[in-house]
Amino acid sequence: MLKYIINMIVALSFDHKKWLKIENKEAKKGSVSKKETFFLTLIGIGVIIMPLYGEISIGILSSIDNNAKLNLLYNSKPVECKPFGIIPLENMTSIAVNPQECSSRIASLYRSSPHDKAFAKEHLIISQSYHFEQIKEGCVLYANGLETYSEMLLRQGIAIVDPKFDNVEWNVRLRNAQKGSEMQQIGLHVTLIRKFCIKEEK
Image (cartoon, rainbow, N blue to C red; front, side):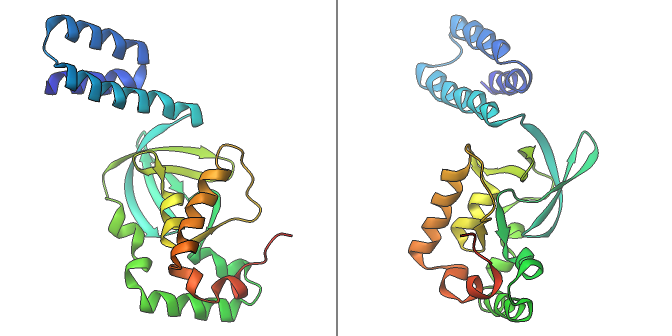
């Protein structure tokens, strides 16, 4: 069984047709039960669907600067990964309507919610492999299955969707993630951070 799973993962990484050949071969041997075949087929479908979003690679998380900047290793080369389509709290001061007040409000939120400040370090694992892709709006890191790191930050209320962001593939997902934290009134949504930090697009 373990050998079959390893073969499946390797095959999926390079060629989906190879995976189908492996599954058919193992099914004929009878080494995989119907339940296991169904479960592994679901995994296979998920991995096959993922490339529809773009060219997905696998990188190793090498370090975390803060919630807004991660560092990966891809083919032994460093890759900077800044979450796409959003403005994390760490980046708001530089574009703020009122930088001083914005910085003060963010510092206050992080003092009251230290786990939010350490979100990346608490939810991502150094030296672990992650699927990712680079698009023009930033780095798409699949940090929790098919859920992206950007969506995770939005759900936690420690980022907002960039008002300038417009990507047909991702608009709905990111806005739904933000809507969740807005409805729960968590993170920046219970503060005046948005008022002092973000110039909303009209």
